[in-house]
Image (cartoon, rainbow, N blue to C red):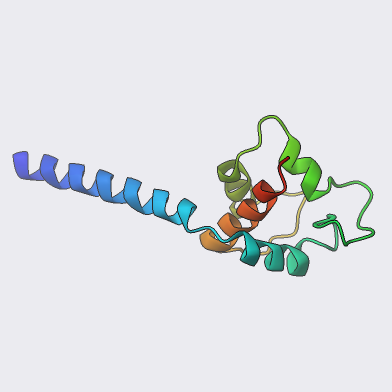
Length: 106
């Protein structure tokens, strides 16, 4: 029983370490590139973009929301939801896009 508990503790620590390193490894520059490719049809993703769909918020507005966190955005991008196309982003791609949006916070 002690061995099982020790293995569980090791797995919990390893999992926590991996999730933290994934968040720390997020690349905002890569996120900008992905956003321009996948998101710019509907969202204004940077200040150089002149137009997108009128009924969706620009990334700069999303970044300013009081409850914004990169983790929330990355989770939102990975989970299927009806209002957006399903791009089937990897976890690292979603984290990169979330890091890019976070970089737009003022």
